[in-house]
Length: 346
Image 1: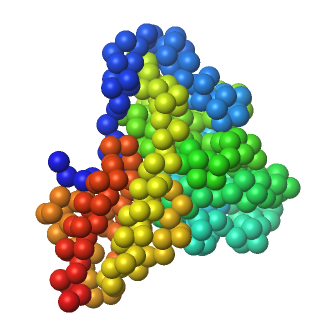
Image 2: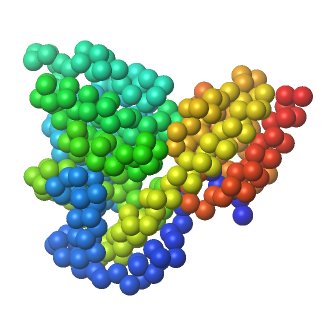
């Protein structure tokens, strides 16, 4: 079997998840009658400190539903130029909702400069779209899994409230951030209006994401989900795995972080790699290759030797640790990296 470091989306459900899915009590979720979905939504809302929650099929769907619910046609969203919501969700808010993105430069640690945010808020002028929403990402994928602190999150939330704006958190890997910081998840969600987090990444469920926020917001979000075709029926079959994910998989995320740091430290020793291991805070390692290397060719050679990674523009490679990747796998992957990269630099 290859060592698959492309993403933590490749995780397989645990034996406990499979059993829970098989035994799940189900009903029609569109009618609000699936007891397993209802239980997951209540549990998730409590876990992130919000009044209500909604079960969705993916993180992208969760973010899009949030943006379409917070904003109307002609509104504008402030977000990072490296944000998943900007780069990797097919322009959905603009395509589906007539919502304009206002991308700001992400700092290396995944934050947006507070002064940049404030300067981007539109004045009340008929020529401009209305600034309606500020979106953050924690952990920040393209910035290497970096974590946004409670203090920073609170500062953005306070800024938004002063200007009458709403806030949304793309927390696809939110629990990784909380574990890395050693803080309750609510320390990262309390200052913000809504939050999306994935069950299907580090938490290892096969499908699903949660959107949480105030009860009236979630009521409207449920309608938005229906508009997008996201209303499921006997969804308890997959929601059951999400319950197991929240109960059993959060505590082990620190193992993934340790494996990522081990990988980063080994890679940083290679002359062909540009990487500062101190920036690896969670389960994502993004390394840059020296200019004379073709990142796609290197990724293909790694694949040929049994290590799967994601090749990014800018001569970057991403490796993500997750459930199913062991310390022995990390050491084996490092041997392959050395074999693939060392001849190139000889």
